[in-house]
Length: 182
Image (cartoon, rainbow, N blue to C red; front, side, top):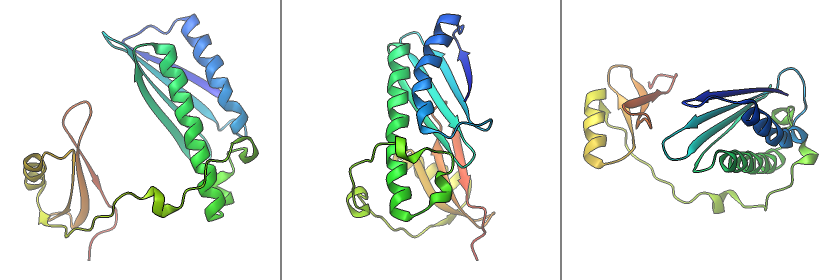
């Protein structure tokens, strides 16, 4: 597994690098290790605390965890715990849906099974809605009026289903379906 440790607003010292690499090596037992597996840790420092983003890039899919904590090393531990939990949920889904090709990058025997939950137990709420055709500006106005962090609508100009959302770093983001609505 290749490791990339990048710092923002912090100088990544040899001590930080070795501590993070040592903790990330706990994840190696879950992956079929080849040249395609890369683990990137992005470390950010703030006035109070630190934020750690860990992304594991594999041949078939990527795993990502993000944790903010007062202690950098505790944040790394929590992020790794999140990744392990993601792997458990992934293993359960792969077994239930019989998709072995999706699991090619993982050593499934090493991942402990998660307690089985039916899809109905996981799904908390279902909501259907009529997508109003509108412009981006109208969608922003409607989302702000509702006080929501995201808003789904039918883009009049593009004829695409679109999701408008507030970005954490400020501003807005837009996700659009690639297929056009007939």
